[in-house]
Length: 465
Image 1 (cartoon, rainbow, N blue to C red):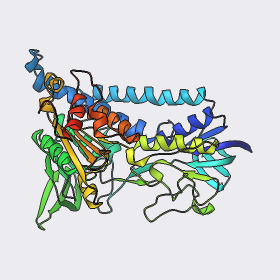
Image 2 (image 1 turned 90 degrees about the vertical axis):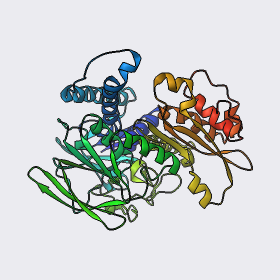
Image 3 (image 1 turned 180 degrees about the horizontal axis):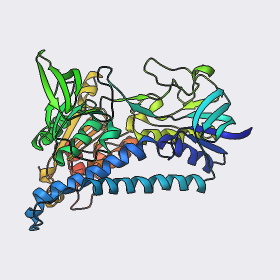
Image 4 (image 1 turned 45 degrees about the horizontal axis):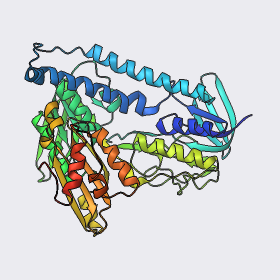
């Protein structure tokens, strides 16, 4: 039986990053993946393909509605879904191939097949060529997550779909109902709305992006509504019936009023669940909580001494970059080094147009914790770079401790804030203050100046407002 210092189950962002880091630290590593390609949901049917389609659909709107503002005449743009999907597929193929090359470069053994724990130190891999058993000094569980299915509205892959099918549609649906106004629902709803679908979004809670700051979420909702998305809050789907030509969906609002909608396609985007079943965890008594997450301690170790878990399988936000950081940390721990993830500085992003990005706590969370804070805001419409880009919607909001000025939360909605949030994360990682950020010189003209002005506004001394 072949023996490895570390056997990692799952080759998504958490798993493959853990494999690379463990190999860098001199450990022998085997990476087991049930799918034929590496990269997990993120690279294959999640983060990367969705961003490719978002970019394509945003360029369509730019050509249709905004090129003329620059004196550029192109006529009415036409949509070629096949080419658009082909570009997306090429990007995915290149990145997935890149991960495979990294495994070879770092001498990580990749085994394709379904992994099963036979013992705390034995993993069985069921592949197309038979069954292989390998011995593990440590096992890292990184199986990721899957889309949540509604019991009364199961996925059929055609009329009622998950994000996977929504990324691979070969034609624009006449109408699309998105159930859930989180990042996945709003991003994919935005894509198909730009490409011509009538999009309705229903959200059970009274706010889109429920994890976000209320003011920032409200600004994003107004922007999306102006783009044609019909967003219905405090609304739930109570019934659905698949017909020959679509889906009859019944929705109910907070007042108890119901309405039947005839929809071409329904995208269910109400969250994801950990993939912790069917991997033999029960046979070795790995503890799992009530929602299917693997229970770990502060060092990612389960209740079984040499079995660890990371990523969407464990507590915390289901984000690729969170899984990557955990992958690095667990590899370093297994190599005898300190490994740590600061969960207070993990950013969240929604890649709509405008984008939403945040890190740290919201106003509501600070008030609930009875923490006094000061607030600084600055609007993109007062920024020269935003004006020249023709993207003036949104703002940056900074929340700083009233006594110490330490930055406790940064919330943004606007152009390319997915890139701007990294500066805020860095300052917060070093427990910096709004004053630190305000006195940091920013190049002019740049969008990042909005972050600086918001930091200055914490003490009511923004220059350009």
